[in-house]
Length: 114
Length: 111
View 1 (cartoon, rainbow over the protein chains, first blue to last red):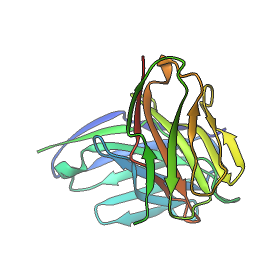
View 2 (spheres, each protein chain N blue to C red):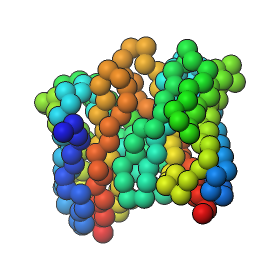
View 3 (cartoon, helix red, strand yellow):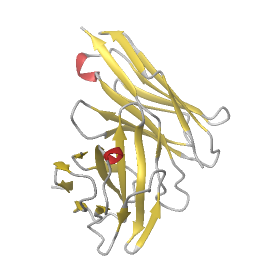
View 4 (cartoon, rainbow over the protein chains, first blue to last red):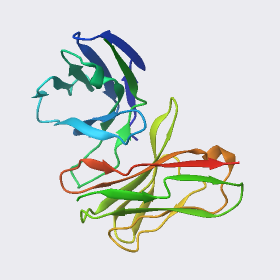
């Protein structure tokens, strides 16, 4: 089955700097890669996703890149702000036959220091 | 308002006392899922359901049961809870867009 590895497990950056979180996946059939943000005491919420027919996707200060050949994808947050502090999870699934289980990475705790 | 609800939000129980955590969604989603979240282990899937009367095991199904008799509801049943099932539990649902919408979570403590 699918296995998703996520690095680093913790990340501290100065406010205004960029943050990068990396994930690798094992199943080449996976074609949907979402990123979820979980603030302290809250539920995970989708912040951006990418499908395998696209190499990069941006939404304001966040972007995700996908390298299908290497089977890795990354989340980039630019101009970080204190409200970006949270745990971020990457995930992978195969959607050719409709919804299939998301396999999550173990998470990255991002701390933005003001 | 589109949402996923879970009840109870907090529960402290004793070993062996059967309990049910309810999950309900009002978005007419076919796919529903249960996860447990433990420090350092991320979100691990317990069971999922592709539609009514269709359920499948996730990565950590031992000690749990589910049922999907109606599209909107997907209860999680612990027939004989043990302390290693102390965790934060999330229900989620998903429609054709694949985004999973999570419930608010249920914090379970088994003593």
